[in-house]
Amino acid sequence: MKKRNFLGNTTLATLLCTSLLAAGCAKENLTTQAQDNTKTELTENVIYGQDGRQDVYQASEALKLLADSTVALIKNSELTQQGATTLIAGESFASSYQLCSSEKFREQNTSAFCSGSLVGPDTIITAGHCITSQSDCVNTSFVFGFAVKSAGVLPTQVNSSEVYRCREIVSRVLENSGSDYAVIKLDRAVTNHAVLKVRRSGEASVGDPLLVIGHPVGLPTKITTGGKVRSTANDKYYVTNLDTYGGNSGSAVFNAQTLEIEGILVRGEQDFVYQGGCNVSKVCSDDSCRGEDVTRISQLRQYIPQDSTPSQPPVTPPTSGTPPVVASETFSSSQAVAVPDNNSVGVSSSLKVTSAPQGRKVLISVNIAHTYIGDLVVKVVAADGKSVVLSSRAGGSADNIVKTYDATAAIGSVASAGSYKLVVQDLAKYDAGSIKSWSIKFQ
Image (cartoon, rainbow, N blue to C red; front, side, top):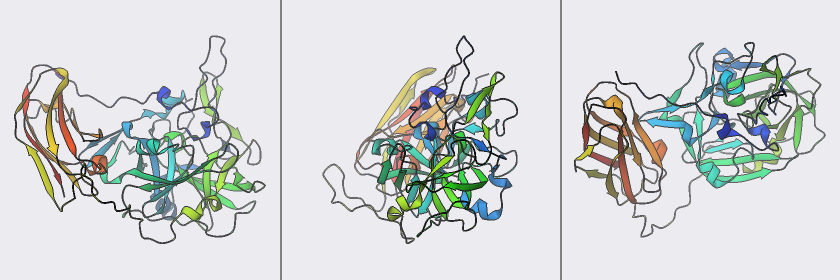
């Protein structure tokens, strides 16, 4: 029997950060336990008093609405689009962090590296150390709905329509012991999640009650209550006692009474301590340890839209490399191409596309003859190098893939015309097939 290919786990090595910016990483730098039994420590945040973290399904309706407008920042490489569904890769919390059995949420996956929140129809705020450049922004997806919404149902996928990409960085500041924020414009307006309210005037005061919503250590959305403002001594950030971890960086911090955003979680105490051969959350009393730093919303609210109209990208005249966009276009190939059996290199079929999506829906139709489609990995590579996996060893022993996929989330932002490629790999023995035809439609 041929085996199906499952998503691999994310390794710690791919997510290591510098010690200066460790507060923003979902998976912090582990000091490996040496032969002399030097303890392992993860540098980040902490539990103050009682652990206030809860999954979305456990929260009140008011808090669920806030959580619904929270995004997980996930690297594009951790996502695999299969038509209307996008799979989310990830490693279990327990495995990633060598956790002791007493730790909460240890069975859940750590897929995000930072958190963000919707503050305009097409605007996200996060921490400045989470998105360091336009290139970094382009390689990041902003994912709604990565949350445990029912007891025992762990999220491993979302609707592809819930995955957004970066259009531009509106403003970004990163100071080692000051402001730390980024304001991001998304590739399209968000229509099915509410825009969160921010404090438009004044500042929080010592003792004000707080809650935070985000993705601690990259976990599905956690709502954390019971915090408060400990200090307002610095004019750029508050010190709080919120129960937060790496991956919470960029999380919106709300006033628990007004439910307005007071700021963005950016820095804090270390997360874990090594104890008896495994890691446990560090615990401090409410007013001890260094506290958790929250960039004041007043540092960035000038960049946050005050109306509900999404900003529009600038309109530029078409160039010779990007022909004018028309209402609907289809590009197709009916040239048959044999797919080599048990060959990881695979085969490709090229298609000349003389336009660009530029905001239109991208539909990819394939007609692949094969007697065991669970052997196949099928993807499309766009003119600018962006790619989308249409099928990854799905379907078991069924024959043929004759299907249309919505690839808008992955390649709808491609701005250039050129050659697109359909790539098919057969990763198991005995069954063979061919690409019979395929097409791309912009509509």
